[in-house]
Each structure stands twice: as C-alpha cells, then as structure tokens.
Length: 201
Image 1: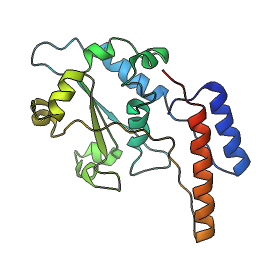
Image 2: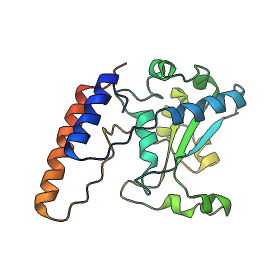
Image 3: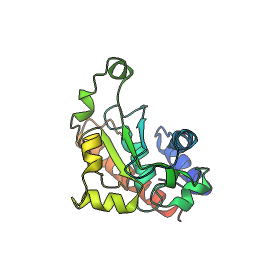
C-alpha cells in the first residue's frame, strides 16, 4: 500500500512505540523491474505478447512474499498497475502500459531456479499457488477472465488473477490467547492508521 510521507512516519512511530519491527514496502523494486523490461521490449505486434516474470525474493514471509509486490501493483486504492498516474508519479515509464502485456509475480528459491525445479510455486500455502498474473491490456484481461480468449492460458498455464488490497503484511509470534488478542488489537490499530494515510490517485 502506497502511503503519504507523513503517513509513513506515523506508521513507523506506531511500530516503534509498540515494539513492532517495521520494514518499508519495496516500492522501488517493481519500478526497477518494469522499467528494465520497457528498455528491452518493443511494442508487441499482432498475436505477440510481452510477458514480464518477477521472482520476488522474501525477507520475513518466505511462502507468500510475492503478495507484497502483488498488493503494491494491484490494490484497488493505489495499485500502480491499476492507476497508471500513480505509477508514473513514482517513476515508472508510461511506455510500460503499451509494451508489457502481462506481469507474473512469483517466489522461488535460487536453487529452484538453478535446477529448473519450479514445482514449489504451485504449493498452496494458505493463499493459493505462489504466483499471480496481471494483464495490463484491459481488453485482453477481460476476455481471458470471461473465457472469450485463452491465448495467455495456453502460453503460460495461468489465468489472470484478482487484484489484492492488503493493508500490511504482519506476523505476530503469539503463544497464548491473551497474546493473540493483543496481536489482533494491534493489527486493527495499524490498519486504521494505514487507511487514514494512504496515497490516493
């Protein structure tokens, strides 16, 4: 979730006051991936597709870490693939929306990539397989979702995914009911602060 500058400071202060380890969302990382692809891709011709695959390395969420990138890109409020004006504001090239057909975000270890063993991205770890695909071409995305087209499914084995509006990724090490209740209360407070300080389109 993109925050205003004062909002980011409020979230950091809340976390510091409550003893919560805070990590900034890595907004610049998807920007760098996308702009690098723009430099390499040409505008796709008829029956041509430019697919950008992003392997999202994790910090504290090894199984579902790709959801960090997915929410930054596809949340309804200020996702950078849904609101091009916000993408451009943070430095993403406007050409991205012309050159890139779809972006696939996934999480896979270096060992899996080295040996071509990608079976673990299909594991369901509470949030479905460890990948998502967003089709930037709205007409094609709608056609694929309504089964009026299956060209991307045959090319990738994937259907376009739903967007994700996720305020924060949080992990509380709770061992009893009292600690779980406190973690839930803190989580709700954090979501409220984020909701009041989101960058709007």
